[in-house]
Image (tube, rainbow, N blue to C red; front, side):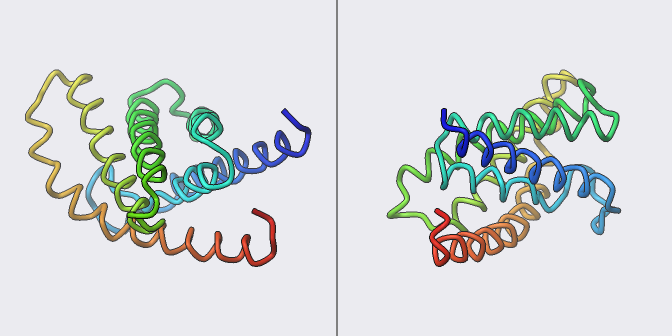
Length: 168
């Protein structure tokens, strides 16, 4: 791995960690547990656009560990929910990016937000041994579409800027 690539990955991990941590500090505008904007997913999808799936998995893993370490939830329930959601979202976004002629970055971001919710609920059902937690899915899906759209629009503008300045 070149030094330049390693430095760029470190920058992406740092950016994703900061976004993850800042989002954990913000009060939730919607008083529904588990609903957040998902700003760190911008960096996950950017890693997919700039590099590859393996690199995005590195960013996902490091940002969830570092973000949870900073917020004091390392290896707790919050970490497990965050990691499982981010991992499934990364997998879904990578798959859809392979089919990119059919999906925009905004659509991929929305699918990632939906997958993040599903991943969290799968982990929650395993932790609680309660499949009834999936009754919460329609509410989470309803809210994940606008949040995925917002993060997708932010990513779209970021990628447009990076391409215009020939940075990617």
